[in-house]
Image 1 (cartoon, rainbow, N blue to C red):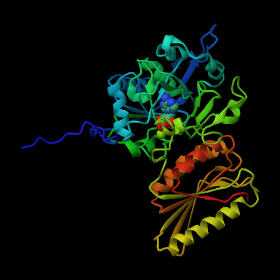
Image 2 (image 1 turned 120 degrees about the vertical axis):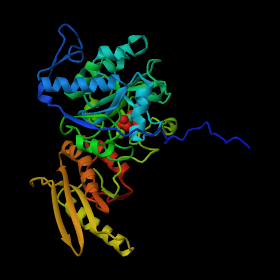
Image 3 (image 1 turned 90 degrees about the vertical axis):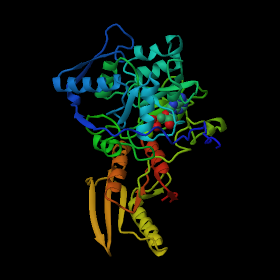
Image 4 (image 1 turned 180 degrees about the horizontal axis):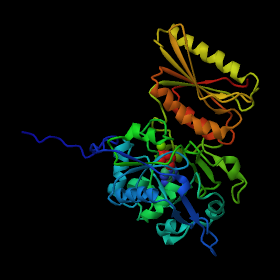
Length: 420
Ligand code: AMP
Ligand code: MG
């Protein structure tokens, strides 16, 4: 009998089956964490030492440390979105992240540190490229990831065999104190099932990953709500590879950043386009189960007509679906709060056998609020079982650039309304 033909090429999507385990959720209170800056150190803030003032929080951190030291992946709060963390220096631990999320193996991970001293331990020659020092001093800890040269200490599964590694120093007190207590860096992508909207609450992580990871630390809602900005200052001119929590506008004014470009907005590069590290081209991203239709417009809009036009357009789009025979029972509308009106999270109405659930992400003109409410809104509408989600776009300014980047990837249809 001929031997069975075994392929040595493992499909990117098939990681070993994840064993079913009990997922514990432990609350942590961020008000019980303090950081003491190191005196006489130019980077005293970035080398600060954590102090946890309450025993229950110390115990929760120690429990997470125990799991991470045992090579497990743990859900943790960060200021951007919840992360799924594992020891970045251990290949087996990193594999658990890919397995739990069902993340494609060629999508590299960001390595999280809790001090510059920790970062130096895995930099070639223990040296951070000088171009980054003023940026680190100003923006770390915070929602900024920088591209650095990698080293043999970082497993190739983290970098996907690229010569570079992406590193972030999160400002969330729980993430900072946890990494410090581990004593090793943590690789951590967002703690959602691959392709789904990112989690901004511990309950989102539980929904996606229960039974697949042993522990989630619940530090409350994420403050930023979108992932970090990915900055590559090793290239000339420097480039934002992915817009995020730190805005293009705030980076521009920093040393060496006056020629800063945003990938796909200001330039496209064939090599980058092919690289697995380029965010969001190759894979489905941030998408709820419902079909998402995004209405975008030019940055110069008349704020007086923007809501009226959105309502008229989504209603006519809905009529088009119904005319084409699509059964629509529940419609989600994700929009901004008009300037001067009080923000309501949710409003439900029924008309002609269709239920309409309207959610407001945040006030128009406050893109940081919209960023905070966007993933939460997409997840909420999905959990309500809507068939369609109509989303109102916002100008691509400040945090609006990150918001529109995510919404475009979540959308299965984009309707450009031009200048309103
Ligand atoms: P996330 O999916 O939010 O965990 O973010 C990871 C993203 O960071 C990847 O999808 C890449 O876009 C980016 N990234 C990670 N490592 C690198 C790298 N070495 N070079 C460029 N981008 C990277
Ligand atoms: Mg992600």
